[in-house]
Every structure is written in C-alpha cells, then in structure tokens.
Image 1 (spheres, one colour):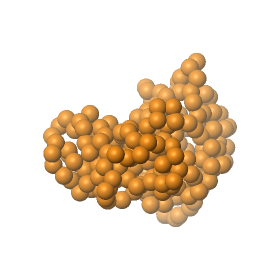
Image 2 (cartoon, rainbow, N blue to C red):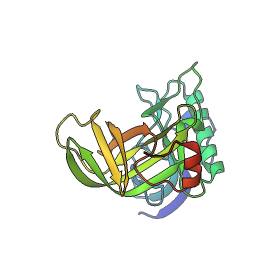
Image 3 (tube, rainbow, N blue to C red):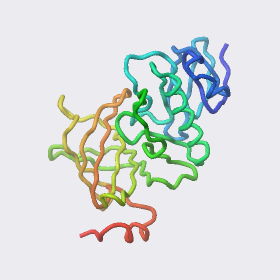
Length: 240
C-alpha cells in the first residue's frame, strides 16, 4: 500500500554511517527510486513497498569506491561513501544545516565534484550554490535560451547560476541545458548561450547521471540578465 509523506531529509541506506548527526532524518532502503523536481526543489522518493515521500534533501549512505560527497548537476543530494564516514557525515550535516539557515531551497556543488578526505581540509558552503526562496548569494536563470555549438543554433531550456568573484574580477556561471548535442565528443567543446540580448561563451563540462549536459563559463557578464543591475555596474566594468 502506498501513501504520501513529507520530510526534510531522507537517507537511503545504512543509518549507522550518519553517526547520529542527522538523527531526525527518515531512513529508507538503498534501492528506493528518486526523482528531482526543479520547480519545487524537492525530491520524490518511492520506497520498495510503494511508499512515496517528498524530501528537501536526500543522502545516500552506502559504501562506494570513490569519495565524492556532492556533485554539480545533482542538487540537494549528498553521499556518505566512506571510508571516512564520520568526517563525511559531519560535513554533510553542516551543509544541510547551512541550507536550512540560509532560507534557500536548493544547494548545489559549484565544482564538478566535492570530495571529503581524511586529512585534507574541505571548504564548506563556499563550494556550493545556494538558490531559491530567500537566498541572495547567487543569480539564477531558468528558462529558454539559444545555444550555439559548432555554428549551429539550438533552442533549449537552461538552468544557470553564477556569482561575481571580486578576486579575479569575473562573473563565474555554470548550470545545465536540456538538449543533447550531436556527436560523441560534446564534453569539453565550446558553446555560446544567448538569452535575449545577453550572450556569453562557455564550455560543456560533463554529462550528468540524468543525461543532461552541464556548462560553465567566466567573463564580464553571464548569458542572462542580472536582477540587480546597479550592483553589477559598480562591481564590473561596463559592457563594450
């Protein structure tokens, strides 16, 4: 029998790997099906017996040969793969708490992968985008765009987020687009994205587990309009 429920965090797998740091989480089996809704920034989790849950965050607590805790393209989703599960669980708990305190509805890794190792320090929220709800850390665009690849235009939907870096004076943006590109070597190739009169060049980063392609770029401006144009004019050189 299936029924619906809602919780902040759902853990897939072995709760012992959490070391009691996310004790309010709902625990289900590792074989549960998951689906992310980018409109509401929530996960739907369907257990093996048909129970359906809505979760803000899901955490995979199963052993894995790699040490990736979070990945770009997989928002609100973390892993505790081991072998240093206590350190990884502590890191994930800090991120979940940071998401809760920020008022944002979505947390997503800025780099392609975030790893937590035994001895090396790992930066916290600075390695993640916090978007949605009341978060103001990043500018986000989710909508139609024209992607140009090898001289060919492709109408598509994109979800992009970015921020101005005062250290290098550039606007760094990344995200994903929802159209496939022809050929087997799309990853690493150059693209241009245009939203209205805004255009920027980027590069295809990698393919996500859902089959979409991620893209990133850096320059004076992103390929989408910014909400706070006055602040941008102060922070960045004028567009020429």
